[in-house]
Length: 489
Ligand SMILES: Cc1ncc(COP(=O)(O)O)c(C=O)c1O
Image 1 (tube, rainbow, N blue to C red):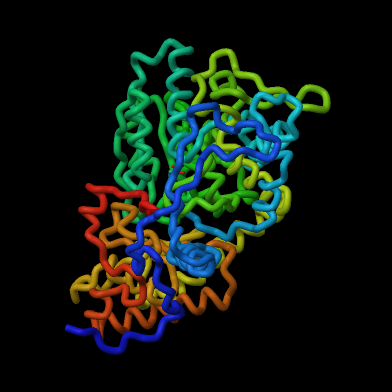
Image 2: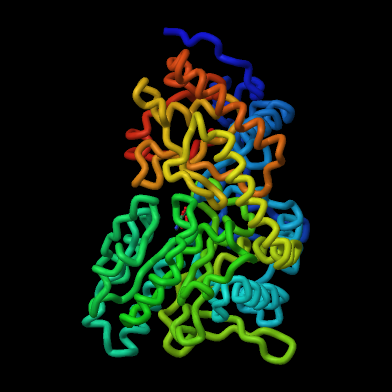
């Protein structure tokens, strides 16, 4: 059935790509061994080869249009609202991109101990120590998940140091946690123990108490939780775990709601990673690139992955702690991402970060309130920077995926869907502090239109998107047979 009333979208028809219109194979080849004017060979003798020149049969204008259209075929935060809950796709200020291209940084070599890059990394460590209250910091981990792994390995090393590794084998994890928490725990050799959230979607001392005992190595808590809710018994839970001899790990993926307002040490966190690519604005669509610095108490500093930057007089020196869990990454970590995070931090200052957090929480609550009748919160209470909505239209056959796909027709990237797992058909909306009031209102209007369509004309949703080069893809096949490149010729 052809859907009725498909509204005009903001997406204009893109010119066809040359891949679609051209059958001409490449007939000209270029050498990958070009000789500069002074005759010095760039590639050792005999190792050069000729490669086909893509689109050699087309004019420059055709090729420019092809690549321009290609660059705009995807959604990005520079073009579209991107309310991707938990992933925090905030705007990435261009100043950070400009600084990243400065030759001092672009050409920095990890073995140059005079490089200005070392000061950037050293100061970034200090910034993160100030924001978390956990003053010992390693910038090594290349993602949030790797930060988690580092953190759990630090717990392991600390327990081994105490001679308690054999007995303390369990890490407690609420059922609202990101899947990487139990995965990191298992990779580090511990047994994850799931704590079922209470009626309000939160953990409480009563829910955690029965699981705490001599086997407890620690607990991993995401605060705010993946439901976008502040875990208000976290301080008491942390006290209980400490009293039992365990460590408290804070998953800092949602730090964007509280950074600059409260220090995680105030509620008992011993170890925490920060997804700097979420909190401090680095482009990270499609699963990367990222960085997940790990911050710990002074007691645990001896186990941090190296190298760590240490201030000596007026410069920084890289060194690795004696009982370090080892390296996680070559060089200084994911330097390009760390540099952008540093640029973001110095251009905002701690006070600017605090204001961002406040604005992010305000925007999250604004949307939750505006949509409360048509996309009600799964756990209705004041949210933090994001809220998890229910999908009331499932009974009429409209699934969350249909809503997500329909949003694309309106030029809005889909929110995170089907996560957290404890909410069926979850829609997780995170506007971030970057969106203007006008954009928040437009998002609300679009969601109202979609809610109306879900009731009056559900086929429009079930067949969405209508305006993009690709409609629904076979996601099972796409996962089983991943093709991540397109041959240029
Ligand atoms: C709560 C939570 N923890 C951990 C992670 C893992 O972070 P990363 O994707 O940087 O590995 C995520 C990512 O979305 C997350 O939302």
